[in-house]
Image (cartoon, rainbow, N blue to C red):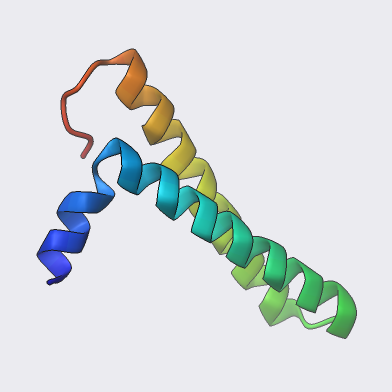
Length: 71
């Protein structure tokens, strides 16, 4: 099941969906961090934001470089 999820994550739709989900999680943790002042929530929001950027750049790269699969 994890292999199927990993294969789907490497598609254009998968990259876009994961980017949106990670952006939502980053927003939620930033809100919690501001509200509670917890550094752990800031760290989690940074991790999810970096994941969002990776997925967005891979998504854009899939359009620039054609239909070959991302690594």
